[in-house]
Image (cartoon, rainbow, N blue to C red; front, side, top):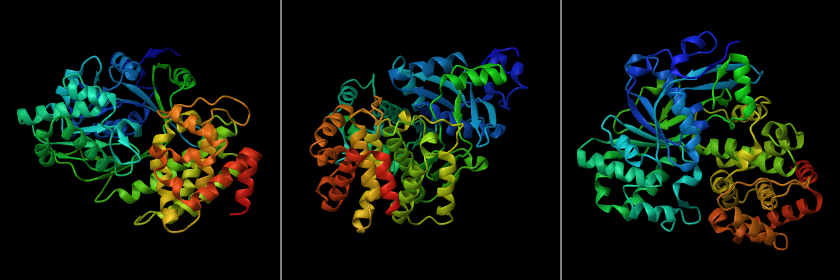
Length: 494
């Protein structure tokens, strides 16, 4: 099979091997600027927009991707070389591969090299929506107080160097100031990150920065910028070399950075777009008045479920989510946690079959073809824990209900944070609070409560006597008997 590099010139040559954009990309103009073009964005929003662009009436909703950080240099270079094109590889439960080339990203900017270009694109009158996947840690939120972290050195830099910002807040502020000055009209800022109330959080954090840096801009923003909440869902593991090799072997397509994902996809958005929006209903996006119940369900069941499997599985020496969930005791532990601790905290889910949703989750986690790396799932757990698991803990404690499984997971995370699994292998921990976690985990070996005194993650949880009791027992049991024996015992008593 002849091999072709993925680019605009070679599309006709590979047209019989893979699905291609059925529209003229030269006719597409940018209506959306997206910050954070990682795997998830390319498997989700960019895929939805690609489908929408098949209808010529939507040609003004192309995407300009923005790489915000120096870390994003590689993806910028790849997309630039491939003309914004990439292959989306959907791994079905039966192992079937569905492959399609996505063409909705028609422009791409590297912010560290071109801050002015990024600001001007965000401020352009044709841009109606700015979307974000900047990860949970990108919102500069003090988890303990819920307030903006003004002491972050990059925030101070942006205030003092407005023309050369480093954070999303600096970029947005300058772009909005230009929109106001040039009368370029209103705009919607849409977060696609796994944060409960992501629109509310985005608005609060941005307005906090602007009050600090350019307060005169605040009245205009209140009248001209909307911040809808959204819930996004599609398991998208990091692309690994074997994914690139498999695409080349099966299709003859040389794509430097394809995206692999599961077949399931979901996007629920509050319909609050002040400058208009694309007709995303036509491609399966659900618009609702209140996304909060759906969001809470997804964060508490899917995202927390991932963390539960990842933390326990990592300690036991597993490398991927599917390997860990195929341990029947981990699967049983997860089911009990979801049924007995998460589900009682959920409500207002009209039209949602929770029992079926949880069954679907287990099937998705079990997909042996996805190979989602536990290291990826456990990265930045300090930012995920307050959003995925702590709401369940708080809800259960407030109602005087069981927190046995949640406390066990947190105890396991304290031991995980020492950086060695039960096979005496090193754990590669990627977390902004890695040093703090290790220091507290070390203290926890003689005083388990020390770990849950990390206020930025747990707030005042260490003052709850009922939680401390069950958490301390879990910690001591895991240290004495190992994770699996403790899980078996906990499962048998639930």
